[in-house]
Amino acid sequence: MFTVALPPRLAGLQQSAGPYDFLIGTWEGELEYLDYGDDRTLVRLATRLVCTRSDDGEGLTLVYSFEEPNGSVVTSTERLYETPDGLYLDGAWQIEARSDDAAGGHRLVLTQRGEDNGRPASVSNTIIADGGGLTITKSVLYDDTAERLQRNQFRLERVPAGAATLEERIDVFDPMTGAFVGSERTWFASRTAKTSSRYP
Image 1 (spheres, rainbow, N blue to C red):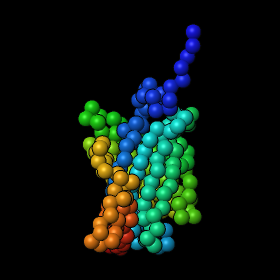
Image 2: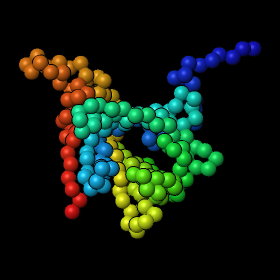
Image 3: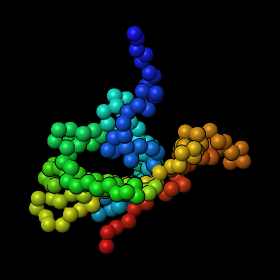
Image 4: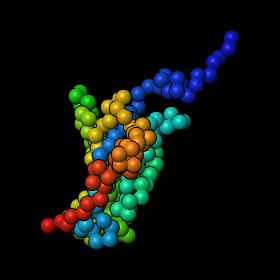
């Protein structure tokens, strides 16, 4: 008798669906965040999120790509997995609430004690997936205030299977302009990578 080790891709097909698999896929949209410098200026960055099952099968890997106001494209990677006390997502969180509906909608509210902008605060992270949309909203309640502050929000749309990804568009060269039309940088620029406004 012998056993055959399946390649990682095939082995992954045998894994049962996880409770957070609704995040798996490619998402594109924007990140809007409240600038830490003055807590008033809103900055919007074109954003792309690729979520996959982690190589060890024990959670998900989230890779974000976005353009900073200075024009540089930055990526960051986070792990999501369950812990005995709650959920880990770039830090330890408690699961405050969770709901899943028959139509495929999901809502997850995470909370933690920590600091924001150097001040002790209660922090919440709310993840809502509904249809083809995904929002991830971080808000904070400082210990010395009574009003909750929205620190940032991702507003993303799922990229349909088979649609061209940023990598597939990067080599489309336009001889008329001498530019790589559809390149990652062009994609970011087309979505108003940097705008700012003020709270009233």
